[in-house]
Amino acid sequence: MKSDFPYAVIDLNGKVLFSSISEYKKGSLVDFNDFMEYDNNTSLKQPGLIKYTSSLIVSHAQVGTVTFLIPKERILSSSLCLTTFINLIPIVLSLIIIIVLIILTYIFSKKDILTPLSALHESCRRILKGDFSYEIQYDYDTEIIFILAEE
Image (cartoon, rainbow, N blue to C red):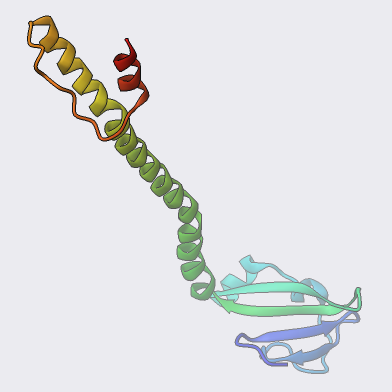
């Protein structure tokens, strides 16, 4: 069995089957309480390492236990940055989509609604002053212009 980290495999009777951890010799018997101790005790004995223990399951049955000694920097530094980055992706994408929608809404409303209404307002203001020579410029017939033309 090949691993980037030191490991030990213990069967259900406490016999060491494979080990690359110096304190667990192949063929020796170990106390499961010592073997499955959690990280606080391991951190005191071997600072900088995290002890990860898991059941070894083959064909839906537990046949033993495996423990890995993993350097803290391999877990904490990369996973914290990666987790932060992955958590920010949906937020950033949502903000980009919202900003694009706001810009498109503004462009549409300015071109098709606000500019014709502004021209109509200017025309009405000039008519009130008695200037009937002002013409509204438009690219296509819109409902507002069409309704005014019928009246």
